[in-house]
Length: 188
Length: 69
Image (tube, rainbow over all chains, first blue to last red; front, side, top):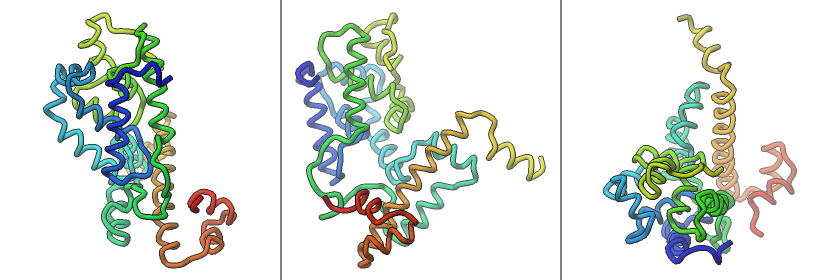
């Protein structure tokens, strides 16, 4: 699969690893791919993000991701679903942080010995890369570029898709700016 | 609205999507809580056996999930 990745797409993969290293996270997750995409310049994905005005709201997206990580990585939709059951996630996080320190519910597997080892792509992040392949096939593109990784992120339910959507970046809006109004068939 | 109907409307939501989403979210929250507690227990010198006993699972299960490889 990787031989079909363009240099831009490979740079996103590398960038995601760097993001994970910067956070001292044990594995690369879709959030790291989102952060790497937001940092892109002069690529198809960065063009789409700029056209949608999301490049200027990078910090806001970054903050939203950090907030979600602190809430056990739950999306807003998930937090709302739990609130519907009478479970107040922020209250739980506050109590756990009181006892175990700020960020203890973030699942960042910091420190020596705790899930130490090679920093690889987690299953979710690999799913996104496989999704990029499917998106490229659906759009009849021969290569997998960073825009396909972006599209795969937007079409996969989860925190990055939710944050991107809050910043005007959806599968539909990205295909619109990159492929015109016709867009493409949405890939699973 | 009485408290009873309010509760019934929320917890027993008829829309499966909302109910299932809540269950999935709860599972993720649970995983995080377990991680925090297991790490804390290990930091305090608890054995895998003791941790497994409290969690009600086998020692192998907890060690496989959290132990060093």
